[in-house]
Structure formats: structure tokens, C-alpha cells
Image 1 (cartoon, rainbow, N blue to C red):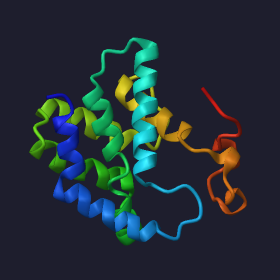
Image 2: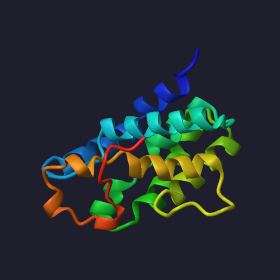
Image 3: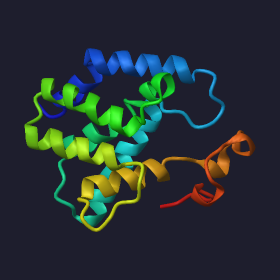
Image 4: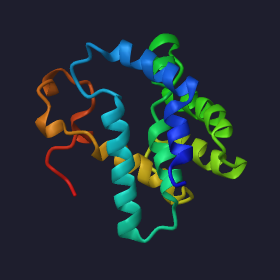
Length: 162
């Protein structure tokens, strides 16, 4: 059945644990957080990009990368480990137990590890779409906490983009 591996990620004990810790840590955060709405926004944008480009990416790889791309954020909050590094490691553990092949797991891990920097020419579409969707998912132009945000002004989304 389609979506079983994605449902397994969302139900995975390590995913649930890390997501709950992050949710508790960001509960009072006044600007954009890393909640399920953000993760699903990123997944849906990535899927749209892939459809528009005719990219040969499975919906499962797209959703796996999007759901897991910020799973290391609590490690960053609590221990200072960069979230893309912690997230790639956690993703490996989760994906392996959810039935993803070593090749698929590696591809998702590479995309997560690279999602903080603009993709280079050697990056594949999964990495490029994750970077682009993560940035595009932010509604800076409509944020009531924009004045307190520490995200550089030149990186902020100033209008509705499509």
C-alpha cells in the first residue's frame, strides 16, 4: 500500500521522541517553528517542484526527506550539534527500520545534511528541492514577529512566491 513507509516514519519511536522534544523546546517560540505544518509544507512544495520539472523522484523519497529534515533541531537546541548533521544521523536510524534501502537512506541523508546551504552543481534534485522548499515555506512577509527574527533580511521571503 502506498505511503506505508512514510506512515512508519511518522509513527517511529525516535521520530516521535525527537519531534516531542523539539515541540516542547519551541512551544514559546514567536517566529517560524519546526512543527508538522512546516514539515508537510516542505514536502508538498518539493512534490510540486518535482512535478513541474518532470523529475524522476518518488513521492516517498520527497516526503521522507521533508519529514526528517529538521529532526535534529532538538540536538541543536540542547547540545549545540548542527541540526543538519544530527538530523542526517537520526534519519539513517529511522529510515533503515522503516524499510528504506541503503541507497534511498543515503540519498535522504545527503539531502538533509546539505539542506542548510544552496545546492551546488553536483547536488541531485532531492537536495535542491529540499533546500528550495525549506526556504520557500517561510511566510516572512506575513510574520508578526519579523522585527525580532534573526534570519538575515536578504534571505527572507518578502512576497507570496510560486
